Image (cartoon, rainbow, N blue to C red; front, side):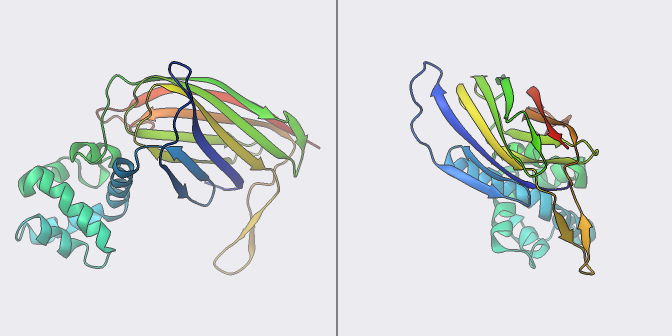
Length: 261
């Protein structure tokens, strides 16, 4: 994905009965596009996030060790050998996940799904990410202020959404379909939200940018040409588009703004 200067904050507004929501621990995740702040239980969310990163970054090493050497010893031995060149936290998460199922159950799960296993589903199976089936959420509005402006304008984007039933571990996905066909956006892991009203706020600085390639030259990215830009916001259980259990789209909504000549 191409990136631009876009910031995001997700905060609780009101509880389901209209009372103010007490402040909860907030975790922050950064990537090349977004700074995302979201409300979640700190301990549970931290472990789920680490598990998600382990599956995304380290599961292939574990599969290769099992494929090439078989199982020599228990969970700790397999994870330590497979991840000896990775950060210690990854070995710890691997061992914890394996211990939940036992080495035979762990192998059976990896054998069934292989390297294509969905990280969220894997982490739910090993009890590191919570599952709340029956969740329900609704995107109420997606608005942009100002609705139009020239190149260089800072656009404030606000999304209001309602959680009717506790949501499961899943993805909060944001994307901007640009006039030239490029897509700006990112997704954020959420360990679920309690019933209530929520607001997501974004800020997009529509300033053309470039990035250095390997040879030091500038590669153009989004140039924010005049035209219509579509903002899409999606709330998912599991990974958006996943066919694994406990997955699906709660709701999505869209808004738009335009960049003038």
